Length: 146
Image (tube, rainbow, N blue to C red; front, side, top):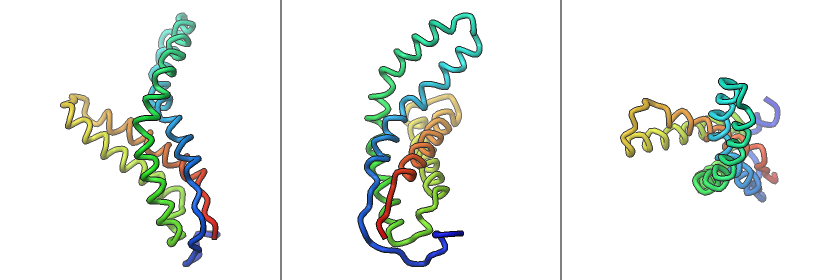
């Protein structure tokens, strides 16, 4: 169990904003790169055009992903870091990953029902993966001062 077996911890300074920025910057590419990678695998003769498309997609995916994911990343990291300040078990990375995946899946389900999507669970799955990845990045850079 290591450090997580402690029952009490300090109420010192929290540092999580760096993780929020990095996670927000990766959100767009996490969504955009898999379809391009599939296109390269499916049509290997045309990989040059796929690489060009990847650059173009990333040019748009980076700022859009940042804008869409910044607020959820900030709120999630702030809440989990503050809970982790007084409850050391809340610092476990798996808890952060599950929280990110759960919130992402919930937002994806809301998105699907609001837009009338016919793809059952598609958006929820994608947003759950992005949420878990972003939560893991936020946790990686979160520091507590005990």
